[in-house]
Length: 137
Length: 377
Image (cartoon, rainbow over all chains, first blue to last red; front, side):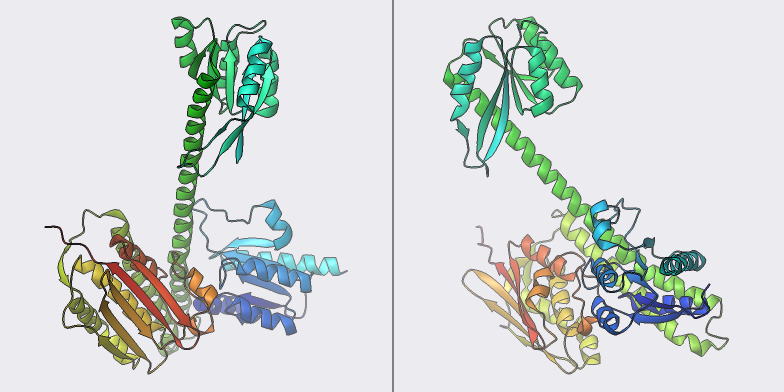
């Protein structure tokens, strides 16, 4: 475990989701930066390097999350990226996420369904941050 | 130009080269086809070699003699059927007996060409088959696109419905767990947000109901003589509290009366959507001008606002289901993203159309034109 608090960039155009996610992550001990659009996130990323990014998929563009993920990985290859989406599994739509070709260029580390439990999310974030630390060694 | 592959399986070299020669420069195109077809002919002297070519080249059409040196034509046909290949099989045989015809047809052969055949007979047979293949392809594509659109609609819809539920659930949990402390006032903001999301969800459901009505039942339409100007005035009255709240002036420029054959409910939905959009995407203290004009051929409804406007790219996306223009200026405006889809579909019910012109930061103009029904006497 890191002694310093890790900083997580949360990007989502649903301001309520953004607010709630910020509260949740701060409660479990992270520092958060929030952006409510792909554009705002891009501006933040120019000057700031978060320890991890949690991105919504559909914002200004229906693939905003993918674009952001691509840009983050290009600029900060070691920053883990989680893409969260509410695009429903129940409609049988798996989106492009499962597509091997897309995985290659999107390079997100994890795809999560929105609304997962906080403890599950915490485990995933801790795991990705630990991996990142191991890779850095 | 598409090329259909034809395999001819016959032990007589004269038949094989004849087919090749006849079809070499043959092409099929009809005015209703968007595509023209020509043909590439493969030849096989035996059933066994035929099957090899079927496996390697997957022809579209198979011209099959029954009487072959090794396995019989009917066996090749059975092979194709068992493998469920999408190949149209035509039997060519001089031994066409009723029994063989019945057997071959039940095995999936679609046509017979009696031997000997003239070039014209062969060509017209191939022409018919090509038409069949074309229509099959067309229906398959149509089905696929239809399915895909429905799929997309459902996925976006479930996204739009789940997002507010997640938000409200999150706030309720925060309140339930007293995360903001013990003072009820500290929860006002999250209650307001929850109510806002409930409101948004209700709008979405009402719009969905409108859309379902528009799409499902022309039988339910109630076309009567309606005063269009009165319909606008009614819509303006309904929206008035909202326009006062946002301090927006609405002006109507219209004749005293304009009768047309229409469903009053549909007109109501059209005006409601257009006018409330003009207020929603306006600037504070802005204005909305509504023009109703009659030309020789159509009735023109023009709604002009002094609002935030749109870029070309944004306009391009405007009429798609659930599309909401997302940028800094629209951030705090809620909507279902279905309003303009509904207006467009309704206008199309009257064989009309909707257009938009817009300049960012200056405003948008929506123009609905409805052709005038020639009165039948």
